[in-house]
Image: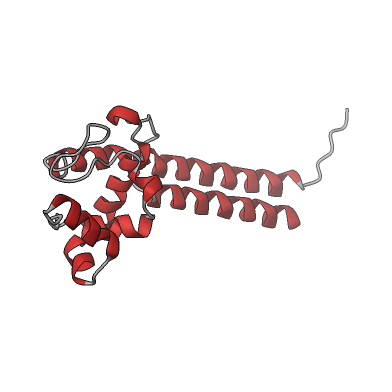
Length: 159
């Protein structure tokens, strides 16, 4: 019985890890959103436009701040956020709210994290494969449990 508990514990850890990976966003979707909503004002490694160059922004800023700046930049300014106010002072134009939901913001951040020098994006495994990966792990765990239970039966072969 202890073996089954270990298998469930390992399976739980795998599922939790997979959920955390999935929750980090899909960089390919983020790239699409960035291309359609952000490139009018921002570049990645191409220098300043209307807004700042976002090369390395995920290392310069905390993720929680980035999420708020992307989702609700107007609220950050209204709250007197020093970083947002500094950007407004430097560029003279406030960032417009883009109307993105939480998942879209996560995807944009995943894209920004994967962006290298000169705007080249590192290849990342798409989160579209996550359901298949999870189902595969669960099937492996199920067959392992079945095998362990059936392996305990005593059988003898006489010749």
